[in-house]
Image (cartoon, rainbow, N blue to C red):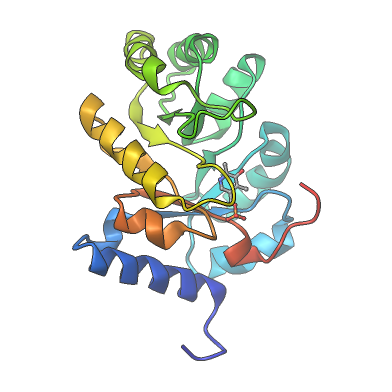
Length: 222
Ligand SMILES: *Cc1c(COP(=O)(O)O)cnc(C)c1O
C-alpha cells in the first residue's frame, strides 16, 4: 500500500481483504466511521470522500454536530453506538438511524414509546455483555431471548446483536460467540469490531464494524 493511501481507503481495503478470506462480500459489511469527540472540520473530509455512515456515542454531542453536516449531506446515516439513558430515548430516536446499545428492558420500553410516538424506526441492536464483565454494558447471555422478545413486543425493529469484547485479550472467541448467539435467535446483524480488530470481526461475520481511531487518529480523553 502506498503511503498516500488515505485511512479510509486502508480500512475499506482491510474490510475487503477480510471479507474475501471469509468468502463474504465486502458490501455485506457496513463501515461505521466513529466520529465521537471529532469536530465537523475533521469529519468533512470523510464526507467529501464518500463516507456516509457515522457513529457517535453521545446524544448531546451528535445533536450539536450533525444537523448542520446533514444539511450538506442529507443521505448520512447516524448510528448511536454508546450507552443510552432511557430519558434520552425520544431524542435518540429522532436523531439516529440505528441504535446499538439496547441492553435492558427499561430502555426497550422507552424506545418502543418513542418509536410509536415519532413514527421513526431506527435499526436496533441488542448489546450482549459477551465477556460477562461487571463494568460493561450489555445484557447477560442468558437474558438475551427475554430481551429480544420484549423488544419485539415493544415494536423495536431489531436488526441484530452488538458487543464490545473484553480489552487486551484475543477477541475472536467473543466475536464467534456473538455470531453463534445471533444464529440461535435468528438475527442477521452483527455489530462487532473496532479499529484494532475489525478485520477479525469481518472474518467472523460482522455486518457492522465501528471504527474510530483508525480513521481519525487517536482521540483526546473521551
Ligand atoms: C469509541 C468506540 C468505538 C471505536 O473505537 P476505535 O478503537 O477508536 O475504533 C467502537 N465502538 C464503541 C462502542 C465505541 O465507544
